[in-house]
Length: 382
Image (cartoon, rainbow, N blue to C red; front, side, top):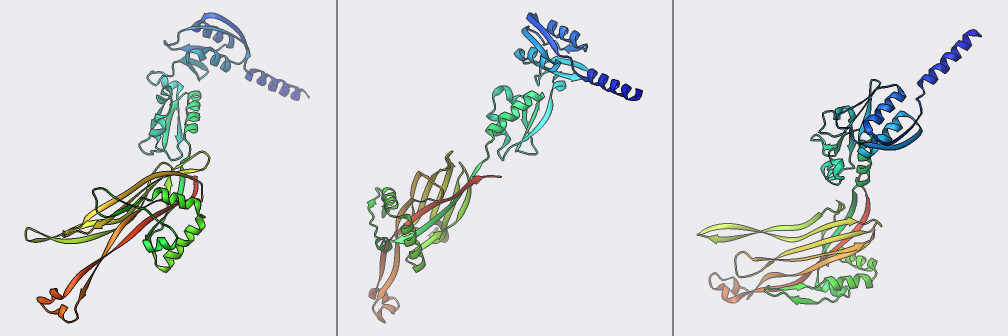
């Protein structure tokens, strides 16, 4: 029984000794160094201060421990404290101070994929001195600060470090001729482009009217049927993943080579013809997407020269869409020329004089390149 009582007494003694003293203090326009000295006397432990600690304190505290008391006294001046082997040390937590190493701890914050320097640029100026980037990992932010400041920095970083949104976009590029458009029941207006030969399609308003007046499923069904029977040509039909705010490009181009004579030598010139579509999606808070689409069509303008001129038509616009919507981003018209030879039988094949009995026929066909864009899905990058 005696041993049990001794054990209980020792346990209670240890608990009482380990329990921190609660403080009741009052200061009015008291020098902060004097206030800290009084606090040191109350807890029976030394409190050291560096030379930067200056100011006055007006504060009344009741029933708080030493840590809370230090926080309240130092708060107005931004001073920090740390405990070193039973001794409390108070000073300025400035990275330029020689005593900064006693207050600071190093923490690592990994971004959701952003370059760390871009996130740091968004921090308040007073936080920037506590952070740095890592040369080994561009997504790592190194925080070197007292624990409470580091916690605030990490909290701020987490608020601005919103995960990147990713958009899956389907781009369908279709080439059709006028006959196919008429079969769809669509009439187009063409305008002469000043300073250029050929015709270009004034398409934006017309297509938007058709899309919103005619069920989208019917338009798409007509397109698929025309592609199947060969009356329309599918130039490209990819799905691309694009980060919100960045651009993705779909290209359906070919290179055509022409030979010309320069200084009695044959020189090969190459021109690039075809379609290029650049899509830039921006995800909105409500889940909708603003699609900015630029379409560029380059085709050869046949002339009497050995190398034809390349004419490029471009359309640029933006529209707000919902997930699953298909929109017509635009279209551009161009002319193609087919060369054939008509000749008098037998006579047209006579050497030298045969050209008198044959002629070259050029037939022109007007075609349209239509671009359809569908926003398939939106999600966060993990």
